[in-house]
Image: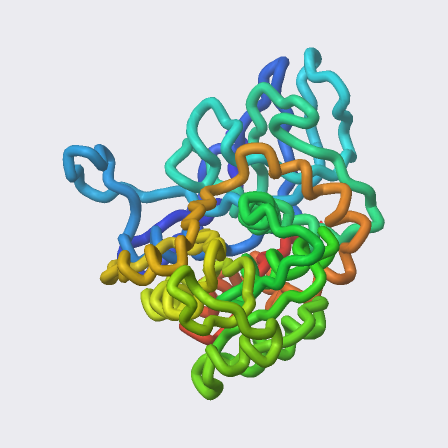
Length: 346
């Protein structure tokens, strides 16, 4: 029996690298050799939990969870019935298309493994092929950038809109890139970490705002002009707010600064907090939730390929699989890293 190494949860705040059976592809499957895989905030959440409940709705005990849902790899075996894929193709993956459960999020397989089985492999549905001009670690951004793209699509931001993105992590910075590629005229990125704000400017934001040190209202008014809410009270002229931070303070800040008919797109996982419904009423603020990537998973791939050098700036750490414990230590330490990508030897 051939084996491979795979990363799974090993209790609260810990991972384990285990030897598991290497999957054997059936006639409709392909086997990938993973070459790079990102670590997501969802992976960190699973580690904080210590695994996944065996029967979540019944509060079952935690069981180990295979981690990783942001892979890029190359086809090493292809079943006889697979169409449009061949050995050597470089692909990114739709983790939600696996019939045995979402890859790395409770499904049978995790992508932080040496090999990954793609069941019922189909180009444009379960995988997309990308050229060798794009490094594997940049291609591994395909999944999180689809999350960002969905948030921007949900915002319906137009070229003459003025937008602020709260949170300069990978999702927020990705949103800033997509907004500029969409032709949006003015994009501000707000965060509390100066290095992240520098990166926001590097990827194309028009301005940045340190919300820990600056008066948000004054700065947005300076950048976007003055408008008003439904009662005529002065507000910045910001049209669209995107919350990629998930902190209650962000939601409150948006409500306090929303002009009449502003829109707030909520893409970050929200923390519990009180909501000023009266403030939302006074601005007729539209709240739009953004979850995952219903259609965007491969919509983003051609532009990721075209602008791969720009997206590469989002990666803060490239860590070899042999040192995967350090990769997760970085991801688990607040402020230590922005986007960690684990790389696998060729």
